[in-house]
Length: 339
Length: 268
Image (tube, each protein chain N blue to C red):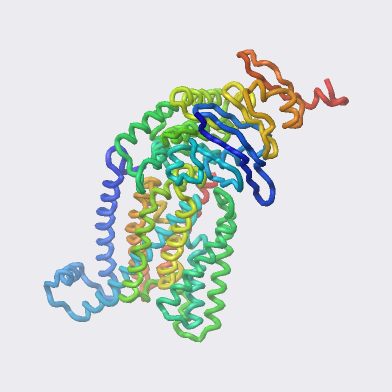
């Protein structure tokens, strides 16, 4: 099933090809994403804006720069970090079904973010920290459940995820019904995920935090390959397992909380893209990490396009789309792995 | 030359002594097999040799230097480990798995050179898995998979290979094949082989020396014919066995005695 064969192309060249092809696909979806919306804009006028050739209608210019572009860019950030998060958790738990949403980490992060808003922390710094604490708490819970085992039993992992999610959802509802803040009443935003709250300022802050996370994870890709062989085998092949595991866990939780506290809970993104890309490129993380960043971004932009384009009026939360695609895939994978 | 030096090695887990003040040496190029009942601390001992488990007390030297003085990566160039956990849910090919064995000699990204590819090729040839190189690891049989993992261990270019029950759940021909490979490795490359095994008869045929363990203590260490005696085994395993001479040569052979030959009522 592998498109690129190892013997013919070196790993570096493969990474280069993935980055090049992935970027082209991503950029074309970005252009489509900017075009589609309540007022249609042609691709030509976008190109003209980029090239600064033509004086455009200031209204269209504002729509593109203030609304459409930040939204599409934010979709890329969310998609990239969630797919990468899924990929990392799958490697760390040696379980192809692991995913931030299924494990309950997104939920914990959302509860943290809401607690932060509820306590009146500042929107960016305080809330993000609270989201991070929330995700770390759920992560510790998962590690507690899986403690001391080389491979976590699939069912116990999934069951605990279901319970953590149920608990987090009820906590979210609880906080929301207590609050008088009108902003918080946008329940769907937290429970189904939504990209409509994106602003240029968000996009830049999130980008600043995500880039170092991506780099750290990319540096550890070969260690992730070895970790898949099991903790003991990885140790015996010279991986400092404890260090790598902690760095990956903290980086990934941080990355996910940064996005989730701006986007709400988006399920299954970390499942769909890593699996699809693994089918194409094989299980080598050195290829999968860049592929997941670009592919996850593309996937989320596509989902956002569908969420805006499908409804007759207005738009639907993008989490609806990701769950409609992801949940059946999850059941399919579960069935296949249980054979 | 001494390869592994152990003095007063002690390890406790949850207030229970798993290894109790063990002291012994293993020579370079020796085929050394650890036997003993379940829960006797065999696997724990094997894992301390690779610093997967850190002992509480005692001295453990690898090639003359304390194991603590080795960095993880430099230790992995000295010792490789074939673990019992061979389950894998991810679709790696056999070739990719064996290539991972080169990691201790490569940089952070594990980028391989032509020399590494050649080493991998040779190792796979050595364990007779060259024809499987593009097959997915989870589609191979138990014996084939074990040989792939051994090829990976060889690729680390180690002085010592540790194996945790490599012949468990394999058929007879694969058991002999794996043991033959280890013997060949020892003779051709002077690699020290340290193995945990439940198969006493197979161990007696191959080992230079055996270590018989029970409850974290050494019962007997020495040549197979001195370790595998009726007295030692009955004391260790607490069941009735017969020890005879293997027709192949001066090797002891153990025959377990079924209960029906012992009971008064149901006896034949």
